[in-house]
Image (cartoon, rainbow, N blue to C red; front, side, top):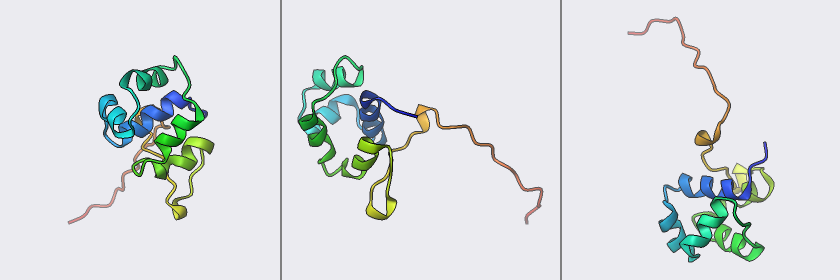
Length: 99
């Protein structure tokens, strides 16, 4: 599954519980510019992507953002993807009675 750059920005931002305005102020990129990236009206240039990913809050997502891979042993993780259609899982309940 390939996720667009705009969607990846949204996922990272929402995983850190930031609204668009907070994200914009945190990484010092204009709000309107972030809006254009997230709505896929434009693609951020490399220097802007690096500015986002080099912020301490987002460094942990760098590998995922660039290659869709993770390395938890190196501190490289993926943000929460639940709201972007992860496959449904079914909970199998045990028939054991407790207590």
